[in-house]
Image 1 (tube, rainbow, N blue to C red):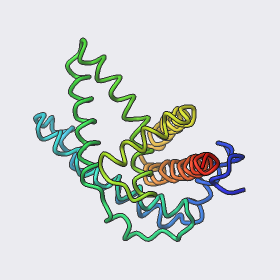
Image 2: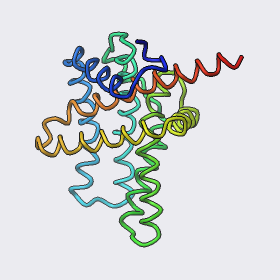
Image 3: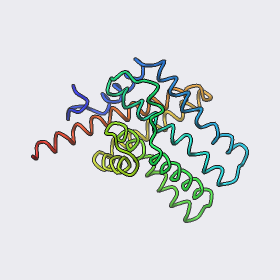
Length: 214
């Protein structure tokens, strides 16, 4: 069964993403360490109760790292033999949009009232769209707004998969917390690999639909 086939089911795609990570576990662990290391400035800023502008600036390194991790995950899902050098292939425009969205959501939640409600809705949108935007950009060579637009289209096309992915993310977060952070090095590349397998299937399905209409 091809990843782009209409008969590909969500459980099968999740399993495929897990197996892809398992077969490249050493590299996935290295990629996870890279992702965690990029979040160190943000963690320090939070623990030090740094001013808002410093917290906002500290969200940029992990956002940049995520764009590189998405390219690693895309190669993983395609079975291309992911190289750690892919982690350096970042998308600054998409990363800045992600960092800005996270910062605005955080500041809104801290403000309370109507701002907190708006921030909650914005955070929900981030959780749904950005995983697909990151991987779509990596798979199709799109950057910035074009990658974000592609991610939004994929969520609109199959929202149930996007909500399932968010649920898997929450489960991954609980696993990280239960392991006192030990599993963090594998959860991030694993979630991105699952996202990449889903995205490959969705893109294949959309391409088939477009081809049948021509």
